[in-house]
Image 1: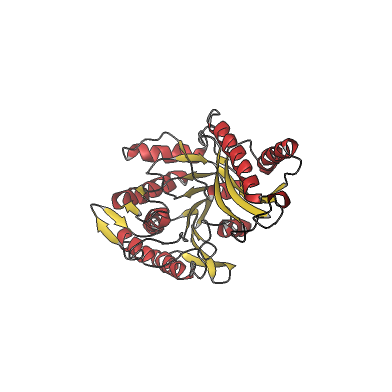
Image 2: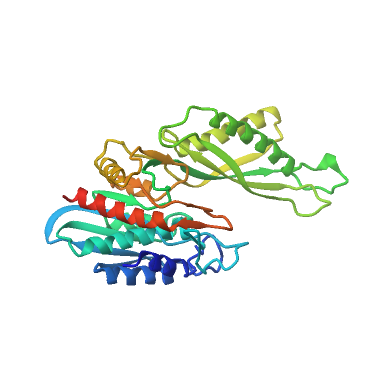
Length: 375
């Protein structure tokens, strides 16, 4: 299978996540490209409808003899393309392929499908699952649905790691804080309460918390926790005291931090602000969250993949990623997972690319690892 041609076919299809970009087409069309490539490679293909017009595409390679099940997993959706020029026209310069989704993560998807194609002709034992899932860029509906019907003894998630072996990453929580003021004419300050000014006090408390989080000792293979303000809105008219301000923010988490921890810490901040000013009104709610992830470096999969990396002249030393991935969902369903994928740059930016040589190396390491795991 021509890996570069497959990658170009994948990035040429608009698969922006409709939960992020209203009106975006979603993953159906790019899923059809992936399904066609998997069938050409000799795998059976199962479509798992996750949401209307948004199917997971799962390639299955079944051996004649029983044995372990290994999974390759990657997502088909991308973020938006605001500010990009010709985002779905692949352009190759100096060994880099530029397009939306090239690095995040159609390079990894092309590598895993091409690896399956190479493995298919001699496949005799165990099972290989190649899962191309939807919605990772929003709430991972695809991975959630996948683990309800499919399982494996181990999984490799081909997110972009610059050809490093990653065994951990942070989690995240999205929270919303609302401050409530009192509407009044702008000329009558005694009658009004400015909800936006009250939110400024919340922001200062959050900034102090972020500094404290990042000053802590890093968690192994995850780094330090952090938080940042994401979206803020408030006010109705220039001459009216705003009676409501809403802030949505993201909290990155490490092992040992759960929903209770992240909700509790902002609850304490709000309580302190109320204690300092009994007219202050602020409330918080958790919107969604995903757990952090970490795998024991002595587990079978990172050891075997590390050996394959060494054979290719690459470092076998495990590391961690800062970004969250579907590996946490797979692991939560009892599937030990690692991250391994090609390098590049420009995740979620206006200029995104993947290194073509890395895509080929990723494919070859996936083949070597799978053969060793099933030996």
